[in-house]
Amino acid sequence: MKKILFIILFFVSVSAIAQRGNRERIKALKISFITERLSLTEKEAQEFWPIYNAFEQKMNTIRYKEMRSIRKDIREDLDTMTEEDASALVQRFRKAEREMYDLKNTFSEKLSKIISAKKIIQLRIAEDDFKRKMLDEFKKRRGSEKK
Image (cartoon, rainbow, N blue to C red; front, side):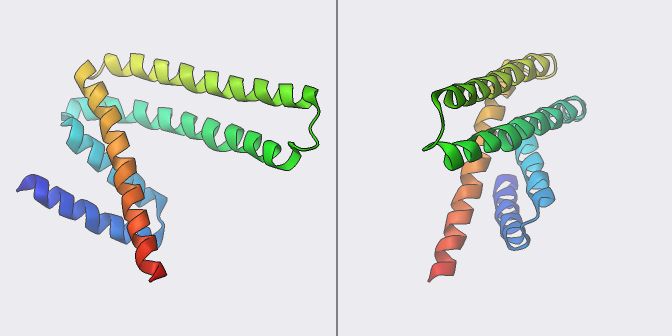
């Protein structure tokens, strides 16, 4: 019964979020979803969320600032780009990828001091499930708008 209520609440919340486009509400929904999936204790949650939020913020900075800048440079200049410029762009891309890899490793190490290895795996699955549910909801809404 609790899971059914949670699922209903999840989809009602997604509906409200999609209409408003509010990132903070999506973030709150994600927190609720992950907390539920991981069955975090109060103590675990108090230690987990500051680390998780810092990780997400750093990853988003790399993903949305550096990687977006690289993709923009590729789209705008690829046809006229010299081999030297392309090489520099590849180096920037490698650096960003390496930073994300290092960040993920550091994050995993920090988490292993707070939660079990099983919960770390469950976190990855929960993140993927949350993204999938959000994308499915988005597709469903876009499909109903086109009709």
